[in-house]
Length: 77
Image (cartoon, rainbow, N blue to C red):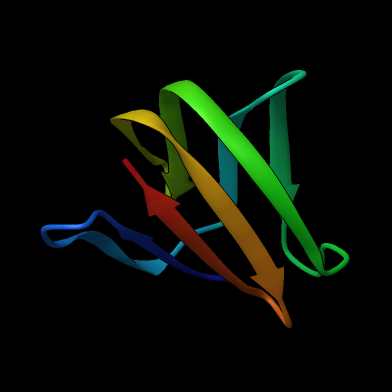
């Protein structure tokens, strides 16, 4: 699935991943391929991305998430 993580200043990640874990307001949650469309608010914490055996982490101060047709867009603070 395609993921974009965007801050007000720049795009910090864009690419295909197999799993994304995010800090939701009610706790951590994960999104995998073919997840249902959704919108969610995010709190301060780490985003975890897993792709081809590699794991990346990005620290955010909150934001929003949109999932539509295997495309994940994170608007992070």
